[in-house]
Length: 302
Image 1 (cartoon, rainbow, N blue to C red):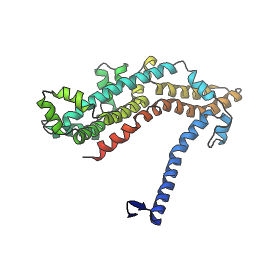
Image 2 (image 1 turned 90 degrees about the vertical axis):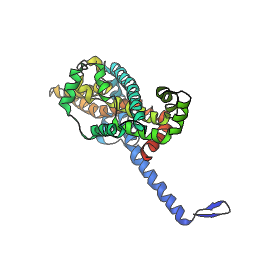
Image 3 (image 1 turned 60 degrees about the horizontal axis):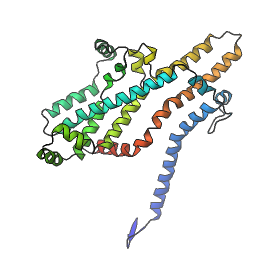
Image 4 (image 1 turned 180 degrees about the vertical axis):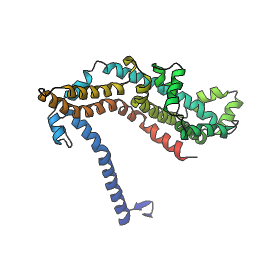
């Protein structure tokens, strides 16, 4: 690229490079976007079109039977509200604990900082296993309670490391020293200075934790027995399983009903994916700006 009198002239090699980059980015966009479009289109298409493979881009034969089967389930609203509660409450606790752990670890004058950081990192490499995990939750009295979905996953070590790095690179020690001269305590400094300057990394943590809570189903399978506590993912799984069982129990004289249920099962999967994904996808545009900034600063620097 040549520069002459504050004017930039592109050479033919620059144009070829830009063209190749543009083509590659378009191909990557198509690879990422097409499966999403296919799932949405299949959820609105007829069962015959989905089974026959006629759906490529747009819905074929508009049909809402898949969504009707989902929304007619009596536990759907309850499951949605439960997932919303787990997501909001869990995310608030997660972000709070993450900041409480990350800020001391970012302080150079924190006593035995390396030792505590080693203990945090150790938990990422070794785990006690599923049975001790279950026994711990049971002994704490959280079995079949809402807290079993929140407390055991109250903090992710990887998020603590990212947040700690963000604090180290964006909260200078001189700022803390100036606040201490003015009589500011550590708690007041975190609340009045650190948090207002860390909205980007807080948004990153909130998005990570919120998506994790929304998609969580394994803990619910292990720890929850009451259907009133089931999250949305368990309800959607139950809808799919019930449809498969009902289709298998039909007699040979109910061939038409069996075929209809088998066809609905294919489309029901796509409808369930859309119902489970839309709430989380609707959050991302509001935190996209902070998300990109927080991930880049928190992971690349330091």
